[in-house]
Length: 396
Image (cartoon, rainbow, N blue to C red):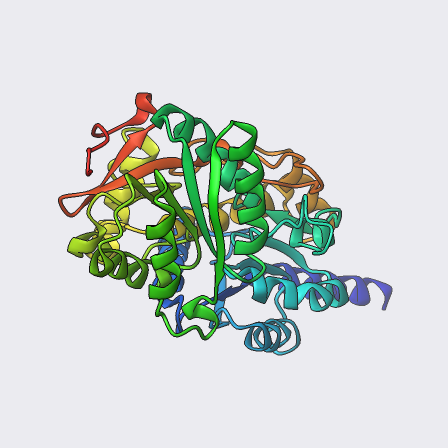
């Protein structure tokens, strides 16, 4: 009888180990950030195809369940809890909006799956009135943050701004958890370089229900006459801001946008000509990993990736697959150890998790960022010089 029980137990264990690993994903597939969400989904789908063609995870095809969070706090919480209670996932991926991520903090703490996150850049660092994502989740062993934090985003531009010889900056920012601390860090950084911040103005993003009418604010920019307009908002703010600048005839020497993603096809809009921004990945990067990703993406989706969130999503899913396979189990402690200690591949080059200001496990930092400029319907990398695909165009 004992032998029979042993055989039955071994069979049950074998069945359990044969179950496919399922990763739950939160992404804004609809709503104001849908362009970025759809780019994420495309990146996840490509990684899933490659992972399963390479043998899957623990010998079984990897499964993903993608829930639409609409970049909305209440929707994100409901979608996450569905993944945990109905879909029974052990691993969480995705992420975009800082506001939605902050709403998820308590639910994350309640369920405590491994969370790997490519959004939610709001750190809270340097803001005494605001508890950000890095401050709230950064010390959790099960939380892994891949996208750079807000202060790393603005740090990436300081040397570029200095190289331009900018003497004055106007800062516009969305009034939520993403834009407010980012603008504070930007203001402090450029003032430390001796650059005047001649205007700092908040606006309500179209993603958060704003009207998209920025004319009153942009008129203040015109009156301040800065060398550079630097705005921090969401992808849905990019085109109305740029078109209204043209409409009003407000023409700073440099216009720099810092959304977490850019709308698909926006480079074809004439009002975007000469606008600059940060990007983590472009298909015209010369490194072999970037070229291979771009071609595989084109073969699967019929177009080249134009949103760096596709590359981050691809990277994120591959890092999970590599870590779980290296662990040889879905045991949380074993997978966490592999995520903490392994070096991963990506279209942006090799990377690993390292400590940041507060977070134990931070992926990319300021060095991930490139500065691009819209030139003749193409996003050309203009900085740093050793990775540039074109010189900076003079637009005024």
